[in-house]
Length: 252
Ligand SMILES: [Zn+2]
Image 1 (cartoon, protein in one colour):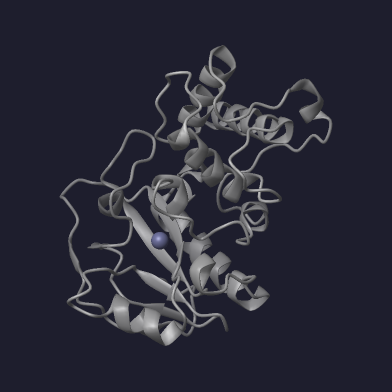
Image 2: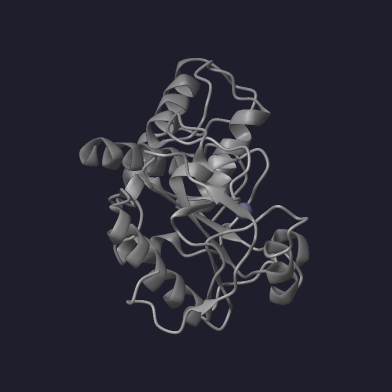
């Protein structure tokens, strides 16, 4: 835990084990708690029988709780994959952000909570030298199962403050693209799958726009084009996708 974060409360969870020797910490995974109350979430994340945890939890008033020491492996990502890796818990720090989530009344993250997440994430990313393209949401690494932290999370603001990946915005870029709808196939779908893959998503490059691809598109939209999350590759979604792919190429 860093001295840069003031007023962290230690609330130990028994739900952790050792990181595999030699595995670097090179990812940051953000979640929302998705429970009716913060208390219920804290209860669960520290309940031995629940077998889930995270390193930190950020309350809606900005209070940060530390649940698991960063050098230990917390259990937050489950079955997940990013940039070809499936040992996400072993290589990441996980932050749970209190919000009831889509099931119990999804609501904006208060400014004071976003500020606390930003300070905490900035510190973690700096200490472990986590690259921008490895700052992800749970839905990015498990798009078929997860929606968190969701489209209300302010990824763009976080990236502006130096944490995570964003793209060079160009409001005319979408003029170059035509919409694609689920059920279509072929070269243009393969191009989309390749771009998603380059960014880090676990996508089959089969040219088939099926439910699996739709789920990944939704995850992509929640993170980088949150104004409409519908799984449809409209022109703007394509423009953002290719701009982001170009940014990954520029940085890697
Ligand atoms: Zn999650």
